[in-house]
Length: 72
Ligand code: SF4
Image (tube, rainbow, N blue to C red; front, side, top):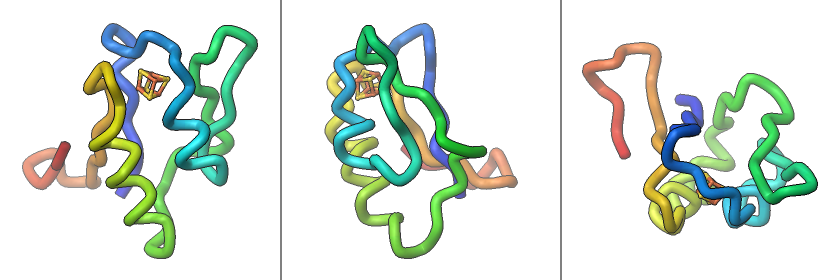
């Protein structure tokens, strides 16, 4: 499972970087910057789901390698 950011929707409030600091930092304008390939380790799945649920722009999704199983 990986975090996917829809850059057309993200408005750079930086909340996701606060909720998932292990996977995301933020740039000077509050836009998220990936710390790696954004693969979510099992221990971070609850935090990743919270970040998806709380993104005010609905710009985050959790995706799997099988697109048919992607969830938001
Ligand atoms: S929480 Fe959503 S809108 Fe805010 S920076 Fe992250 S992806 Fe963008």
